[in-house]
Length: 482
Image (cartoon, rainbow, N blue to C red):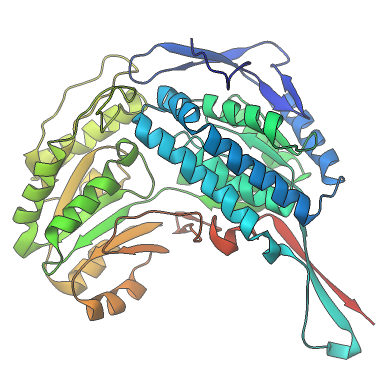
């Protein structure tokens, strides 16, 4: 069982109090590296979720000014930085990513609270320069109401930071639902919120348990005015349909299918380095990592060898061990999906450059999938059509700009893309035609707190981060005064 000063209790959090499930039921959280039991966590349901929403609704009436909200955000930023290593350790134990990555994610999360604190004045009322109809017009940004924040397992603290920083900046009380695969990092965060942030009761609430009952309760409650969800497209589509009766606002970051496009005139060594950093972060279990690597045909053999040479040096193992670059996949289902994509590619003509089928996984832990590179991928293969979410690097050749563009956009998803070329004019004409809101030009960098990020098409809508993200949890009220 896990022991940590940030986990003095393993409970949910409602109205400023630590609570268990009404029926005392719990679910188990295990270490994906070795299957060790880490904790038993309360399995809350609709009744407890209703109380959490009620607590948040009560907090909504204790309006806090911008200066107070800034103090909350600054306190959380400081607490995260001061507890970076321990939070990173908890994160690694339940997720599996290397501890250095886990600790880095904590700093990434702190950056969202820091950014929101420094830019919260964008939410101040503003007076129009014009005076239509002889009136003075003032635009206010009011809290949108109670917000539901539903986060995935792949970034246990990074994803909630994007959402919670903006909701606190807006003064919108939150009910947070973490993934049941990685709830311990969230409980540790709430320990810090309870201890360090000075939040009023009900301003933040944590409900742990199965996604279905809790999600349905949040979706069906008219007091919840905004629901922010990061996860699969299929669940996002269900939320869209289910939100219609209450006209509930949604912010959705859904699946991706990112192209990583390499032209022959690119710096191939730099592109290979960037691909490794991008693709193997979190074991390849990120929505923004490269899923389809498109390489100009004249250099695909050379580029694939460069990538394979670098990937072969990565050390796979328990994320808590020194020198480990790549941890286990989250569970057997994730492992078998990557394996299925690899088998499908090889059976349909792709050629292995690095790695072979590692064989089936007999248990739900220990999914150490080695870095694998294949080339000769085609559009009918599973790794082209679906998001792999693992350390498989599938490469496909293209001839010229028009084919590269057509192949890159050949997906119903639109989240992130990456372009490598030494020709600035090509990039300037190519990037606007890519159907992705985030395009890295000669970089594999993903989101940052300072810039807006989100999806289009089947990757969702809404923005997190940047100035734009501050407005996701406010309602604009316009007041003309005669």
